[in-house]
Image (cartoon, rainbow, N blue to C red):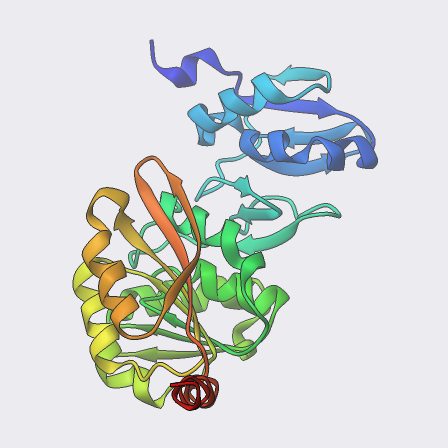
Length: 276
């Protein structure tokens, strides 16, 4: 039996705004598309697997609806305090930061496990201007622009840039992100940022390392299977980075790497020489 057949076309989740907010991590998985005086209307068949998980977790009463309330695309979900939604979903309640994702051809419309890992790690990073290297659909750039500061978003695929720009416009953040289309190796040296996002495959990490001039940056690194990450991590370590944090999901890894400012390293080296 198709998983769609196990779910009603629509669901009304009953509750006050405060109750809805308290249970929103589960409600978001049921694809909320409208608010009523009684609660929130959801379109579960837009994402059956997510909706089934949301129903299992929600502790509020629900009523099945015969008429489908819509078909939002891409599906909504939450990770940490982030609520990822399409333009057709309802807005975020208090306690959640909202990210808008439009459908597009650039990087797909379903956040990869590495993207979710990176979103969960953003709170570990220092404030400052950021550079998103290989921005894809732009979720990390949008998250930074939403809560922390300006971003330069770089991708070689013009379709990814177009999708990310459209999502950013729907979120009202297009003026806070500088989009640049082209190779990372050519564009990175001219971009300004003390925080770097690199959720990219190994070949792109090598391109980043060849163009990077390490000097006090914090690097959020992902796009790698944990089992294959050692050579890339070793290469960043040889550039002077150290691993500050690591996380994993479904075999994928995410690492926060830090690099001391050059001036600090020089003073430390001189101090060490004086003790010889």
